[in-house]
Image (cartoon, rainbow, N blue to C red; front, side, top):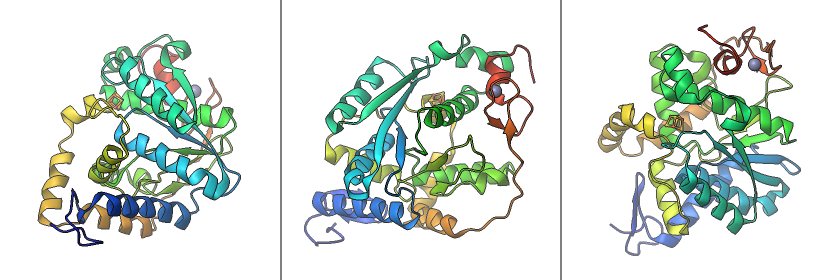
Length: 297
Ligand code: SF4
Ligand code: ZN
């Protein structure tokens, strides 16, 4: 297959077609820069914290934002959360993250679950009979928001890709979580003084594209550790691959149309958790219920 742009021999095959390495890098970087500017994800003077896990997506996100840093004029640091679970965060992933941050000259902040609460994620999951990933999701959302704000950043960037977005869409659509679907956007503005604005610069990039980009750029990343529990259970990956095979470009068209979708879902009013003061729509936030209180609820 020839390169879509220059018609030389194609070396990289992604959903939209083949590219030679140079044209792919150009296509990918332009795409990310365009979406960042189109949705005013980052404006001059912003302080952006990027959540990194050692995987291809968050590493690509950090790499690209470090390239855009001077162009737009914003401050950038990284955050790595040691979840205290060998399967998901371990010395190897941490070493990879440290190396990339050193190369890019980006300051890395590390949070260790063990230093914040006594209980572990797996213990809480067992106690409450919930999937490990769902407890982990609560932890990550809580810690990322709290520390992004407390450390003085106004935006939190994550490496969510188009595959993640389409998967979240269907899962939440089928379980009727329309409020979550309304938040599947490249930028989710803050709705409470203690809630930071979240941005997803790789919203229009597929997993395959991120993999290709990370490989060509030559940074080390962990291939499947990022969400090992999730991967074992998630059938959506196969379903989406099947649709993509039948209809080329499905995922990218899907997220682009999602960007335009206007949903007026009345949001639950946020208040502050009675235990920790963090924003929540409950009396006591899910994190405190799980990690700071005993029993169910
Ligand atoms: Fe958390 Fe991902 Fe590990 Fe699940 S697989 S526990 S979501 S890091
Ligand atoms: Zn709380």
